[in-house]
Image (tube, rainbow, N blue to C red):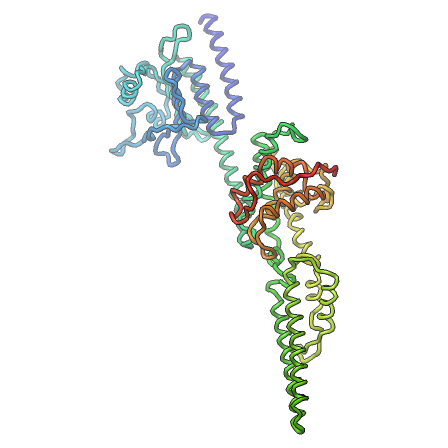
Length: 548
């Protein structure tokens, strides 16, 4: 062997090692398959090639990548151009092995095939190849087909090369024994890389399926939050892409890899996993008196008892007058009864008005509530005179804003503690190690008044701040909640502007959110058309960035 040949072989071996290292780093399946074929063509100087993968049921070879340099054919893989050829069946019409085609023979028998000239090869049917040549003016000559096998020795695909080219002259030659050995070595490395990538993809799919399982259980608990585990990560990723795209401002240097994106996506999907432990009657508490049911109905019953008592009292007094008939006195009694019933109805209407908690309670309303609860009396089922409202009812109806009392708010807030506890127990791989931090901080505020840790803006990662902003906007614009109607886009953005000024959300992120049109893309995709009350070019005023 001459020194030139030795040098060429060593050079190709170095190239093979570099290819193997590059393939092991490729995360995209299409990119990986394309890299395998291009690498094989390069080290053998082949003009064309095809990579086939075994179908899921193992019955055929599916075309994945086709490349022929001299014909400018680049199909499949990352090109986005599909290959119109039908899969090659491994079993023929008679039920036997389809050994007539090179690729199927290689897959069936796990054996490399090296053909010097397709037009003179007697063992295989190259009629399809000749038809292709006639249509394109091409001349298919030398073939080299190698099986791709996984860890268990199963054939998962076939790598087929066409027309080895002599480097100096461009003449088509037979694939040499060295070519065959190099391609077989490459096929071995490529199959391992492909198997690894497929296995990782399967594990990621399985992992995401378990996440969706948890979120489906949460969805089934409450119809009001249904689909939230899809919307929050979707909005978070929209915002992340927008931040990645900016070229000026405080986040101009920020960039994300595919792994970074996947990590943030998983955090978004898991950010509310702790709600699986939150009682649904607290999460969906529509009124101040709601527990497993709305206790306003019990109070309605008491009002009816008061009305009944007022009427009974009137009738008793009327009966007392029967010995000396006095129409004027009876009329006065009836009037007193009507006045009492009117007061009862007014108090009932008042309690029904404040029970939903959609507006803040004033001091005057709280005073009237206490008077109704403590000064009014009713006869309970035991026949005893009791305050009209129990202590628990009075406490809940006295909630100044919203429907949750302090104990219930602690229960709701605990979902983030539960989320942290759940996620911190997971043995996260290196590329997902930040998931607990991202997911666990979505209720923190930039001014440090959030929960559970009271983190400030500068103590939170940018990704955590993205998720926090997305969580707030999704909550404002999601479907009608039991405690409030569906919110218009303009109102939600008005509140977001206020939140960006008062230390709730990151103002610089909100600036990107608005100027890059993230809110608009999200609204068009996820919000009800009746909520979209802003022109597409509307841009609410965004305040300069406060220093939180």
